[in-house]
Length: 111
Image 1 (cartoon, rainbow, N blue to C red):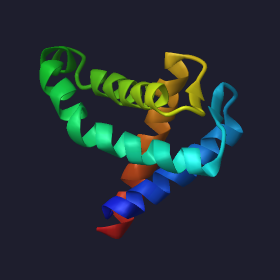
Image 2 (cartoon, helix red, strand yellow):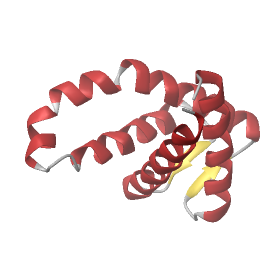
Image 3 (tube, rainbow, N blue to C red):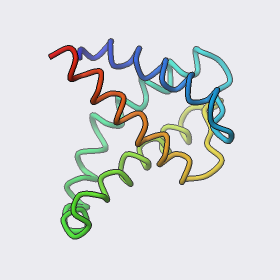
């Protein structure tokens, strides 16, 4: 999936999940778009560093810690974008799991 398609898909996913999950709040669709761009930027620049630094614990947990890193990326996004909020880290982790699964599903259809 191309970069702008992933941004659009994440925007739609964020808006849909905010409607379904209590504790996940997005003020406007423009906020969701900005959050998707910030999330993509964090995944591009910060996530590889975190993955490299957390490689031993990711190995020890058989890769499950990678999901925690995805949750951290969404938590960081929420701290950078006003109007994009989670009530808890656990909710950010759940949203990260759903976003990852949907992105994997959408990417498999295009390639």
